[in-house]
Image (tube, rainbow, N blue to C red; front, side, top):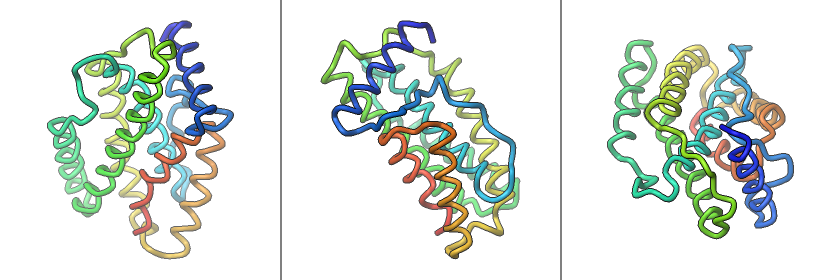
Length: 199
């Protein structure tokens, strides 16, 4: 991402702050730190969800102003089928895994819709470069998919509707908000993305 694109994203985030969708301290996908290896609890799982949510900024930029819709049922089915297959290989519940990944997809679309709305209302804030979905974005998403499976397998005993799980999830979300500097739009998306973890 070049300097002009970075400035455009920062300006867009500022405008969303004014419209109430974002709060001060917003971070774009370009500024997101790389995934931190598992540290126990749900921290690493939530970090991966935050990374995936932030990648939605690039997906939104790639699709904005084109005929490519936010909804992509074929790609979504591929992601869910891959998640189910990887879950079976890892010995974890494929149905629960698919539900978790479905939440990731829905929250990615939530962020894309929010950004597209902003850019439609304020064309001067729209990104000036279009990331390549095939070579830049999807490889990162595929990496996160594999790492998600590892984390889901590693936290299987913790992930249940218990006070322990809910407390771990709460603190992991708080930590992710601090680490990634999530604005209100991305925070809402992260909350939706991790909602299935303790159910």
